[in-house]
Image 1: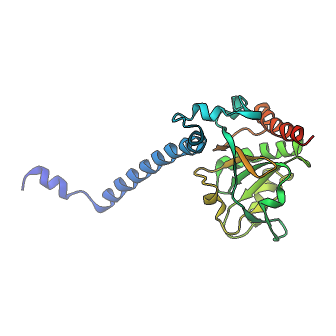
Image 2 (image 1 turned 180 degrees about the vertical axis):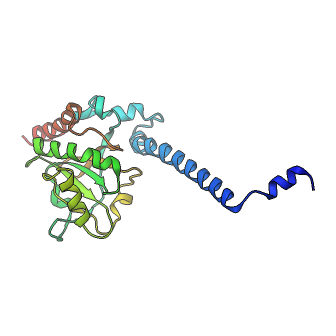
Image 3 (image 1 turned 90 degrees about the vertical axis):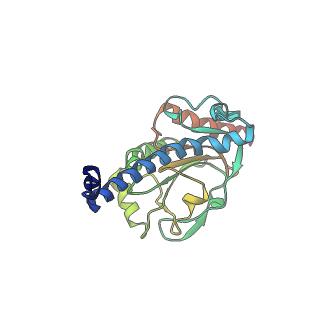
Length: 226
């Protein structure tokens, strides 16, 4: 038996398992980072035929040109798309649907307590709700943790997000139903229940750019109803 064959046989099972694990983790990271921007751009570009996502992402209508600065990753749909009916729980455990929230602009944020970026952006979402929330707008922070809403309630208290309602998805199906691929995922939804655009990943929702984006959506639909 030559020296190279001896070296091959001295590789331990533990070392082999470690190498496989590293390779799998590297592969997972690649898939995640590739799929996140794809989700941001694929649906928008399909309506325009644009393969790049850049033109589609710039959007049209009342939000055109507002995905800049802190909102650069926000992708505006060329045409609003109907959001599927969503069923979730209110803090008291009673069930409601997304149809119950029609009539106002919504910023629907899908989050979980184990999501580190969610913890970072929750106070910003709370600030946005505090400043702009009312009859015409609401930040809908929808938790998808398993095991009940108690952890989410504690999370909101810890992060100072006491102006946000603790909405909870007991079935755990909304993430997939919205075709989300990253955590957090945030959708801007018009009063008719249609998606105007989305942002995959964290963002500074208390920034001037975020406020301008939401205010433009509110103003557009206020003017449309006059």
